[in-house]
Length: 276
Image 1 (cartoon, rainbow, N blue to C red):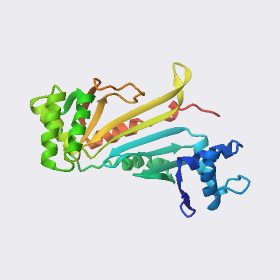
Image 2: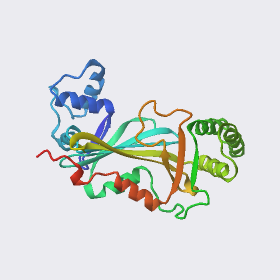
Image 3: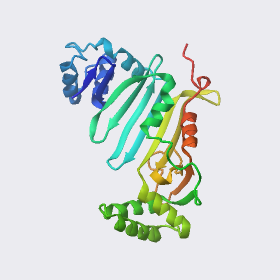
């Protein structure tokens, strides 16, 4: 069920509720598959009997309907992928956080000058990780080898010793890694807390023409082994682009460098098209 907290202007909404708002803002009647979501919104007073939208939705819907910058954050951990994001509107910045296994996300306004901190929070960026590069700071293999390692790791069903043995065997069988590189990659897979990627998009100009501009960053959070940027496959990835033969390249990065790279994802004012 959707809900809201008027004292903090925050909302819990699923994608289907956002779809209802979009239809109503366009003056359309939501289709039958969205009727249940419409009734839920009417039940808590966010939508009136005639489809009118509650005034307290003004900032949220204003940002969603006319965004300057869209930021998507996908974090994949033990419970699968969870989607977060930020919408930078003309007058307000709205952050939204998902939760594993829950269709609803929490939408809340944030101060624009806290945007980088907010993105760092969403990916759980912490400074306590190693700040000096390991002996092996770059590993190159294939996506097929990674898939094989993940399958082997899952087969161990939580048995740490079995996970290490099975994963090592899978890497020997599916990759060209050996020696210290194989050991390093094995430790990264075993220690992996989460993988994440941040994608920013906005209307800009390319070669003098208006164009959709995209910047993206993908990383592994490997706990005691620190952060590793996924250089290949390079983001943003298009459907069908990655195959088992595709290269996988991971490069160690310090927390401070990650912070700088997240900051660089955001466009400057000069990058944005002035609609005035």
